[in-house]
Image (cartoon, rainbow, N blue to C red; front, side, top):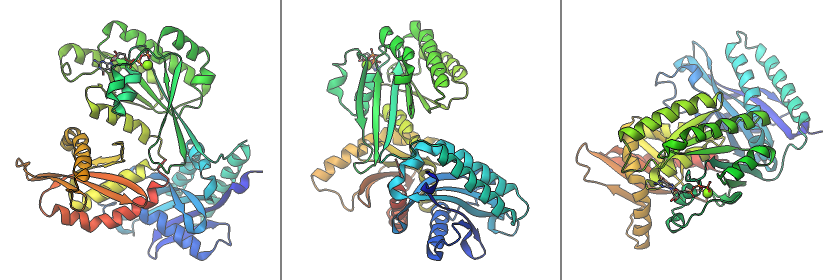
Length: 467
Ligand SMILES: Nc1nc2c(ncn2[C@@H]2O[C@H](COP(=O)(O)OP(=O)(O)OP(=O)(O)O)[C@@H](O)[C@H]2O)c(=O)[nH]1
Ligand SMILES: [Mg+2]
């Protein structure tokens, strides 16, 4: 019997009295605990600006995993809005929260995709139902469905979340170089030999993370391709994230690459696996990018891949080992897909940007991986592209010589439009993170200092369950 894994289930609504636990199970759930859960789940997601930017109700919904260390519990929470003419902004912030013992939290990560569907369905029912009295019925049905789901699981929790990331593509597409490039192991790149079979390595986003990320770099030569397609149960099973690399300069083999992609899609479908896929149009080198021939290749391959991808979630990047930013952007984007809290992060970054009048900001970890980003317009992302890698190097250098005041590096002299790029190290609990902001010069530091404590507090809650 595994149904006891779920300790509690709560529907909280922000009404006239503030965050209120409306429907909860078990009935004898401690009042203090109830209130804490309602308050934390709602307040973490609700910014001052949330209703004011013209979003429709359906646009606002976030899933995330939150810790409740005082209760010894971990929560999977879904934030959504319920329309209400009398409420501020014509909507009430609401959350559905499922709680389990904190040491079993892998259960959430491993079953996220199913739990999302189940909870989302109930939230939609609540949004659409006319009578408040029906909330109880909907929540009872949700509880039954969650119990049934848990009962069907053979092994609902292991102590560590195991994540499998796979890189595939034709031989010489640049998979192994891509991984070296991300790690700035340049001396290795020039020595790469064709990968034999599979090479496995590990990724760590935080030292403290409770997940094990294993990266499989699958050799792309014909015999290895045949092997992993034949033994797809071994190689393509249980994938959390897939990178597919294509050599954009090798026009001759472009259709072979599309065919391989198509074969992989078919294998995944057979295995009932639907990982997010990051496509890298690789060898898009700085000196040839924008040329007519390359543009044409990009166009052709993009349309082919999109057609073959069917219902898979794909995101296409143009990458080159000579453009570090292109590698780290694609790589980070992929890894961020592994985080159940990615929407939470983005939302928090947006609120911080609005508070500080920043046009854009990035949150990086110590290895320069972009944990989350937010930008109001398209232009600033270009600014980051040029500056982010340099700032981190600058930071390390300055730090070494103890030249930094309060861990800030500020670009001044961007005299074109009185904007600054600000780089700041922030300590969030035991995690060292870096913020990169693009913002108005005027009072920029004061604004950051004013809102940073609250921002850091919230990040503390979110970061321990980032991955
Ligand atoms: N111009 C250019 N060359 C690249 C790039 N990435 C990789 N290469 C080169 O392409 C060749 C193949 O790179 P690998 O990383 O070994 O390719 P792979 O996909 O791992 O190949 P297999 O292991 O056989 O599947 C090497 O000579 C690399 O130096 C790139 O972005 N631009
Ligand atoms: Mg290789």
